[in-house]
Length: 98
Length: 395
Figure 1 (spheres, each protein chain N blue to C red):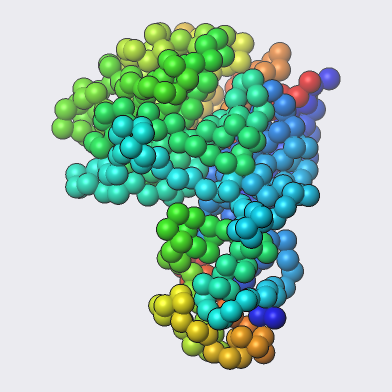
Figure 2 (cartoon, rainbow over the protein chains, first blue to last red; figure 1 turned 90 degrees about the horizontal axis):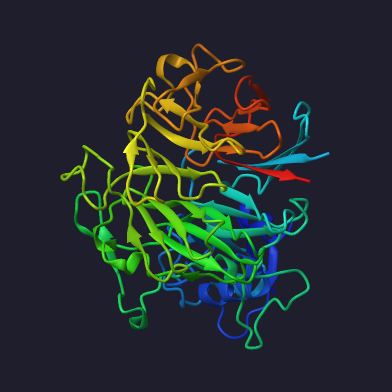
């Protein structure tokens, strides 16, 4: 089970209180995690990745095991602690404005 | 006894203000969608419990919300409770938030760019829904005016959206330019006497009209004069801020332009200025009395660079003669040190016998008048900046 930490606004939108857990078949990558999150919480579709192009929204970043993986390939394998669920995958809204 | 319900969109959520017909005591519900920008929410006149809301965020994009119980509960219509959360193939749903420009060859006009501020071509990019206009006849049909400017329609209660691409593709779309607030389609007027007629307005392209239900469109800007564009009387390029009509006389339109208050007696075919003795004819809102179609309201703003009332006095101006002759309405409104703005969708009128008038400010106040503007009182004072105010008169 993979643990995903969502920004507060997306937790509210998905109707969850804390972190979310998803199953991923096959390689654990950013794309496969986001596919799984969107499958389980379809109301989040389009909020993390653009509806049309599927691109990351500009003010969102992704972190895994303390590393910024925002600009890595969406198909790059993520570290084993993410795949095993011992470390969460972070989706973070960039700090902007007040 | 009738009731009124105000639907207030703000920078940080939506609020619903309810009162009985006296409009003296108000119940405040909210914030709904706390922390999100709510550009607009509006109820269906065919089913007043059906509400639509535009929820958006610079981080997370556009969400469409719907309520079927007058705002008590909300859901995204693409994922209604009790329906499958994914397609049989396992693909996620959530289609209600998806606004895709029509670039198909079938339309004959796959339009890819408009003009940027500097006149260079710029790709059409969806940013947000500015205005939601439910059909007058069918609660499941609703129109959405979006940025970058286009008109979308849903016929299934907001589950999915299709562009009425004849508007962007009618011929001038590649020349449209954004206004200071972005290139937004912010006004949608549905003609109660003619189902095929819709008037829309875009900053800073102008007003456009269809007479065939949205298939074909034409600019309706003759008579507008804008000194900030190379040809002040051009067919397009005018920064229309808002247009209003009284449903009993849909051919008569009133416009607050960037500068100038305008009037048309022929559904937009021609316009004439009715700014008259206003202290400034810059502003954003314009509205019409529910029962007196020649009684109109504006809130003058000092200038395009100083978005607050002249002299620090918040004054609604009323004309009982369809324009030109205006009187200041000040009773109950702050008359010193007031430097708020009133944005284009932030004024509304109810249809009770004594017409009620409401507006919200960027300072978070919502003011109400139960006597057509003669006296005012704040309903709430400390909301986030108000983006829109719509009122429902409930029997």
